[in-house]
Amino acid sequence: MATSSTSTSTWNNPKPNFLFSSKELFPNSNSTSITFSKKPIRSALQTPTILQLPKQSVGKRSTVPVEPSSSPAVQQNWNLLQKLAAMALDAVEDGLIAREKRHRLPKTADPNVQIAGNFSPVPEQPVRHGLPVVGEIPASIDGVYLRNGANPLFEPTSGHHLFDGDGMIYAVKFDNGSASYACRFTETQRLVQERALGKPVFPKAIGELHGHSGIAKLVLFYARGLCGLIDHSQGIGVANAGLVYFNNRLLAMSEDDLPYHVRVTPSGDLKTAGRYKFDDQLNSTMIAHPKLDPVSGELFALSYDVIQKPYLKYFWFSPDGVKSNDVAIDLGKPTMVHDFAITENFVVVPDHQVVFKMSEMITGGSPVVYDKEKMSRFGVLDKYAVDGSGIKWVEVPDCFCFHLWNAWEEPESDEIVVIGSCMTPADSIFNECNEELKSVLSEIRLNLTTGKSTRRPIISPENDVNLEAGMVNKNLLGRKSKFAYLAIAEPWPKVSGFAKVDLSTGDTEKFFYGDEKYGGEPLFLPADSNSDAEDDGHILAFVHDEKTWESELQIVNAMTMKLTATVKLPSRVPYGFHGTFINGKDLATQA
Image (tube, rainbow, N blue to C red):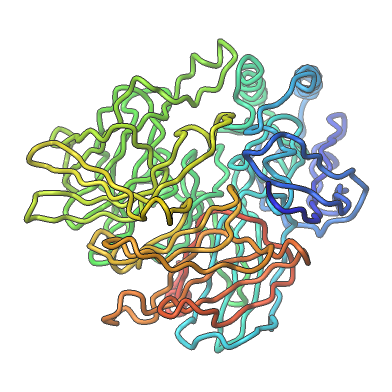
């Protein structure tokens, strides 16, 4: 059971009035808000559903500038028919929500569980400079550390999964030993339109799309689009998962949309430039874990489709952003491919047992299902293949890796070595399960000659812990690496520290954030790209103290595994997802 803590969550007022003019209907500032009062909350996604969000009290939030929306409802007054349609659709939705509330939500869709405690959202924080620092920030740390996360703008009206929240980026900028902090929403088309409407109208892919009510919400969503009340032609994604800096651009990503280009201002603030199509070269979604080759400077990526073939596409970009043709990869059924790996010459694609089966919604279930009949496998394809015909599939039974940390070639044995965390039960993140979740750091060997595989846990069973979210030295991505730095996901789903693991011996050094302190993904920042020591650098991690309800950034020497400095942050940082670091020289050349 997770530890008790106190929380404050800020929500926007979800009550619009459809009988006013568009000017009155879509104010850009001075919005009413709802603020949660402080109350002890327990938070654990896999524990019994006993959580209650605190009672709401009227409060005031800082106003957030709204970029002009492409929504027809913002550009012009709704006509009488549109107003009547909006009222009718809202009445249908209200009835649907009232009906849903008569039934218990599964833990994986219950907002009382999914966004309780320090998983709950925060308002934007304008830049704060001159933050207190305990210790000394290393001189090699010059630039900005950024981490993405899910931060719902509106209080959920029904089902909500942690992954459904609106994207927010949390940024600490370093300059000559001093630090500043800011956090901002990524201004997705979804967020801009919902904020203008004053309510959530876009469907939540995991929390809401279950059974007949999920089908009804999809129908409502597209009906609003047909009536011109919303515009879903410019994407529906939340951009809350991954971050990558490529071709002079910071890209925020989730696998349900194109990336969003976000600029870091000279002061350390964040400003969304817009949905990024790579100069109109990218017309499909892109997963949140593209791979940046440290030698070639190319970016490799995947896109999956849950409705039509090809269910998976592979492509890459030259260092200056020129896209390859799409390479269709033949999958038998639509499959969740959240991550993949590259080597010096190959791309390694998992085809595992978590699949999309839309027909399950008709019978009342979730479209994300664990297919026990399917054999897990990995595909190995030349990085510069022009089509998918040359892919070699190697079966790896009972293997589901939500994340892969690295891969490399061993030519002497004609093997590809893949390092990943094998998770069981495979669908426990998405579907309610009473079985304890395990995430085992594993070495998977794919023999390209025999077509056989082997898999072994890297850490001995007596010393094993759940390791999920992390990285290797980015300068060795796709090449043999000695160390991985991974979050200790205990008590699940919180992160109590991180482990530095020797991938060949399994020797493990652990660093814990402190008593009742929890964090997220550790980011390894090399001190010098030319250093002979692979672990010459620092680990950066956002940490939250559940006793004091304060947050900080911890900087740990990766060689000694000792705390070097702590940056005290001016506001709470919720537990989140993946991050990156942009050095000072790159910041100066942003597009």
